Image (cartoon, rainbow, N blue to C red; front, side, top):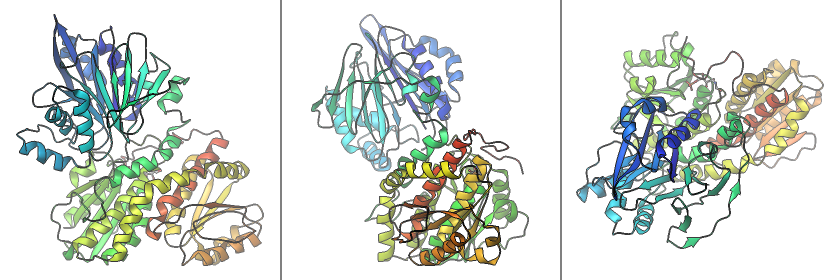
Length: 606
Ligand code: AGP
């Protein structure tokens, strides 16, 4: 995800900004840039140096030596709109070159705002959503920057944390935020701004936290806060005593836990402006003629493939096209029946998985239309596919995938609606499905509240050698993902079974003390799954159940209740206790959850 740093004081700004950006490098980025107000006599001049690549490259850029001022803003960009390039890097300037802006987040209505600006004679030079912001500030500026920022905020839909500097108010950095973090660090005769505490922790432990839709005016010896209507707001200083390591993880012990907790926001970004109640789904898919497809293949590996299994159900239900899910490593060698009537959907967090790339090449050669669901902008799979839709989950650093999975399932369901609408299937059920999708981020937040219960259960069973996950239909799809998570980071042998299959063999493995985890969210199959769990309980198993149904069974050791949702979306919620379960088992075993043995984040070999 992008990083923001700002400095105003008596020191040269560049070294403070560069150090701040370096301390945010762990978050992943593709471009970096700085804007500084240079002073000569009483004249101020805005200077920008930016490019794609590492902060080290920026530091080595000789142009940086010309940035001498003591007020500046800086940014590391993780591309969301437009490929990594100099033009798309931040800071962005308005057409008059008077306002420099850095931005984290996604402006969902940027297409509409670009149009408004163009109609008013503005030219936009980048492909970004961000460039609308400095230009809107310019358009709204009548000598009062606070009014201009407030008016601009009222036009923006989506998420943002922004910093603005200008020679028109050289003693100030104006910052504002909505749904994207921003803090102001307090110094002596100097102040700091950052998207993340680690960026300025070397200078201060005292912070103000901006709340939603607040603006701050940061000067070297004063900081004032306002709401979006410019009413002044009083804030308390928070003292943060983090060490360098935990600060990189925003206070979480591990990246995996941080990423599990990022899921409500990540899913919100995935939904973004693609989905609204009164309009058709909006995806960047050109003019595909979906009537020509008689078959859909979903192809991916590992967790991404599990997301595909979870999405097959809604694709078949709403689009009425038979859908098969394949492991990329199998698909590529099994002569699949692919032709110009086949739609192939590839899913990958990294966009670099060798097996998925090979399967994609094969599908293209056979004449299929290819759509990829990818997290990393500009990665190999996005360059090879006919069409790409991005998950916008933000960088995932832990090897065990968590937020990428829930964002993939969310986006694939949005794709299912898109295809259904393109095929002319509009129904009440589809509208209701949209409502349920929009409610997901808040429900994910609620599921995270189950953390303590899961933690206690994990403490009881972490010494086990074998563990089983069971469920039916979509609950089976989630069981597979829960089992994979556990294997990856806890090194405990585990299997996922379709609950109805248990009695056809695997039940022979159940004995006194074996742990069986049941996922039961479907009103149609919950009773059946419960019977299968009973069979395990009878043989002495410890049983944990994740459910949104009203289950009355005193023999279950722990029941994790999650909110109800549309059955097709239940994997997004029911997987979270399983992610937490794997995490706490591994923690109890004192393992490195972020870098499990033998595994790599991006599997670029066959
Ligand atoms: C997930 O926890 C795993 N690390 C792994 O299964 C992963 O999902 C798989 O290798 C696919 O990676 P991709 O999404 O980057 O293509």
